Image 1 (cartoon, rainbow over the protein chains, first blue to last red):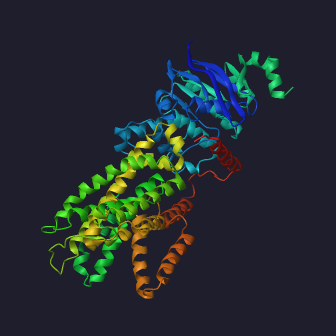
Image 2 (tube, rainbow over the protein chains, first blue to last red):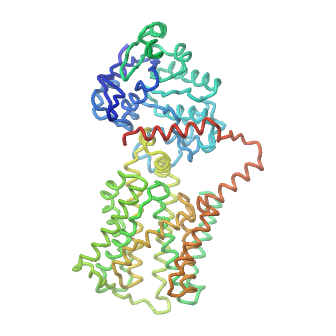
Length: 243
Length: 348
């Protein structure tokens, strides 16, 4: 196994608050790695820096064997690094199918081509069927429920055939059935060779789905390893219970 | 294009094509020329202000660029009178190229800041028109040579030129909707950061929309200058022209094909009617504003989107079996609150 993503010494300060502090970890190829930690431990901030949405104060990122000098969301997305957001960010005025097409990473020349070509339609429908959203393909995304939107966002960022997918709390605020659905889809894509890095608060899900687990506290990793090891680590218990 | 859409366009442009043969009075022709001009301007503005969601207030600057270009080239002579119309495409391309660096810089800002940056552009252009006296004649204005058109059909070439430019603007608008340019612009309007994050070429598509939009506006400005025959900085680079484009697009419906046209066909005649009714007093501007306010109160998203929304809801009720999940759930309002907090947390 080799590291698909390496983060070294990542740091971000917001005024006097150090959200992420000299944070280093790596995500091995072919894993479903969890990034957990108490609220405010810097998980989402780390996500935002890794994906280029936020500029790091210092630190370096290596993805897929290349140093990422100036992380840019679009370039990383095309290089195979996708992410979802805590609050499913979809395009409400576009149809469900168009939400997938717009995320397919089309090139310059395609801009002048058809809005939804036959090929776009076929590949979007394939993914929609996989996610059982096929029946909703022509609805406006705004008409979907919150859980369906999260599913849609996940489906959409898979359109670029990513190597690594970062999921930011994929099951927050959705019903238990949807949690199972989400888990099934992660497992299915994982079986096809996609690597995952997941921020999640549902510990049961983390324990059964993820390996390894990385625990952040106050912006830096305090433990990592197999779920059971991490669970038994006194440092982790301290971080969560504030002892 | 759907059959209904094709018929609508054919009827609309067919009617306008034969209009000059049907109407006698000169003032009706004049009114129609200005209505079609504003329909074209609003349709062009819609490419940026509607589809991309970037409320430019600087489009009148490019209207002025087109107007002064025609005036400068044809100050002394226009030959048989048709040459300016053939030069227009070059003026349009020139203005579009000129706008690329401007759009590239201005579109680094968003929403209200973008509106302020672009309105600054308008006043810069106006100041230049006032102060580059050797070129523009300053406040004294400058004339365009009078074409030797026959007196009975003098206005016809201008009318048809405006009509062609409206067709061009609507054609581009239609093409945008049908291509990935429109898809990308919709994504930009909804959530530009997310669009960038899923690999949409946001910078390129925004600048492209801006350049095409102001290119058409410049061509319309060129025809206007030729038609008016004498231009001043106050009218060639006029905030009211910008405001007109914006109001008409909002009224008819942003990001729709026909909205800006409908807006123009309501507001321009209304403005003229009230100007006639209330004479030189300023009451006509009040009445003009009143129409706009009333329609926006009744149809807040603009005429077309409101009607389309009501129609589709009515159709859904009649079908009854389409599974529309309840959108306004508790988790949604939480999600929205969270999203607001999320975007505050972002650095850019």
